[in-house]
Image (cartoon, rainbow, N blue to C red; front, side, top):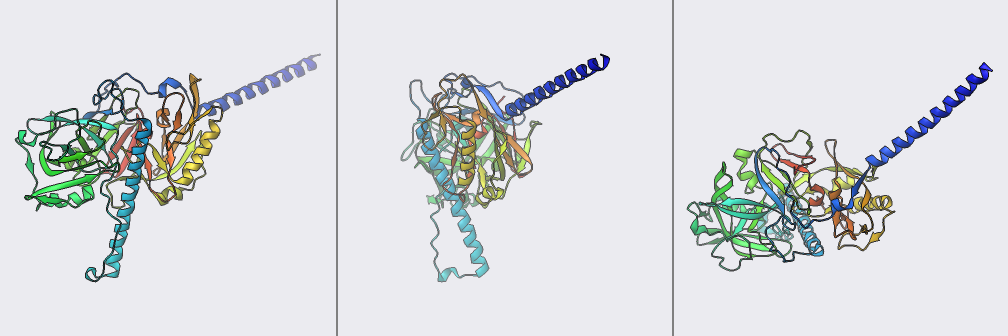
Length: 485
C-alpha cells in the first residue's frame, strides 16, 4: 500500500509539473507575442482637434518650440479655414522625394565627372559636356515650424525648419514682385538698424551656389539668391545679414540669410524657411562657435502636442543611442546606414547591400519613409501577414496598405524596428508606423521607391515623439524615446 501511495504521489507531481511547464511555456509565448506587438487604444493614433501642449521638462541648450503646422496647436490657420488634404500633403511629399533623389543623383554624377576630368586631364577648352541640369534645392516644404527673431529691434518670424535645406530666408518688404500671405507682418529691412546687404564680390555670395544649387546673380552690387522647391514654390531676393535672436541670451550678429522679394508657393502662412543642413551657410554652421554644430529636435504628432528644436549639447538625455553618419556624398543631406528591418520580431530577409547600394538620408521635411523597392515589398508582405485579421481599406494616394479599424477600440499591431550601423536599434512608436486619415483609413506609413538604386529617406512620421540628435561635428546621429516631454 505504501509503495502504491508513493507511486500515486509521484504521478500526481509529474502531472502538476507538466501542467506548470505547459502554463509557463504558454506565458512565455504570450510574452514573446506581446513584446513584438503594440496593443493600443485606437484613439491614441487618431488626429486630435484640440491642442494639448506637452509638458516642458528641463532641457539643456537653447530650445525653441516646434509645432506641426497642420495640427491643432498651429496658429497659422484661422478657425474654419481648411488646410491641405492628406492626399495633397502626400502629393507634395512625393514632389519633395523626387527632387531630393534628382538632386543627389545629379551631384553624384557631377562628382564623378570632376574625378574623371582630373584623372584623364581633359582640356575644357576643347570639349563640351552637357550635365544634368542642377535642380537647386528643389524640395517641397516641411510640416514643422519654429519662431526666431531677426533684426534690431527683433521681429519674430515663424519659419518652417528643414534638415534638407541650407539657406534660411524670409519674406521682406517691399516685396518688389510677389509675397505670399503670412500670418505675421512681413520683415521690413529698413526698420532694422543692423541690417545690411551682402555684396556680389564677397566670398559669402559665391557660397550661395552650394547652399541653393543656383548661381547667385548681382543687382547694383548686391548679391541676389534664388531657391526653388519641388512643388513649384520659390524665393528670390537679396542675400543679407542681420542680427539673429534665438533666445534672450543667444544672439548672433551678422547672420546671413535670404531677404525674399519674389516669393511664391505653399508655405502655409509661415514667413519662410530655416535651413538645418550641413552647408557653411546653414544656421547650424553659422552658430557653430557657440553650439558646436550640435542640435536636436522632437517632432510632435498631429494629436495636438508640441515639440522642440534645441541648439547645443548641455545635459543631453542619457538614454540616447548613436549611429555614425555615412558619407555625405558631397551633399548637404545627413546620410545614415540602415542595415536591417524587423516586423513583429521577424528580421526581414533583406541583404544589407540593398540599403548600402541605394544609401539613406534622414530628413525632417519628408513625411513618409521611402525604402528601396525590394525592402518595401518584403516589409509590406510581412506587415500584411501580421495584420490579416483586420479589414483592408482603400489605398490613400501612394500608401497601399490601409485598414478600416472603425469597428475596433483596441488594436494589436506588429512592432517595426530599424537596425543602423553601430549596433543600434530603433523601435518605432505606434504613431511612427501609421499615417491616419480617420479610423476607417489607417495606412502603413512607408512607400517603396521605383527601384533599388534611388536614395532611401527616413521620414518625419517615423521620427515623431523621438529625441533626434545631430552631432554634426562628431559625425553621428542619436535617438531616444520620449523626446517631446
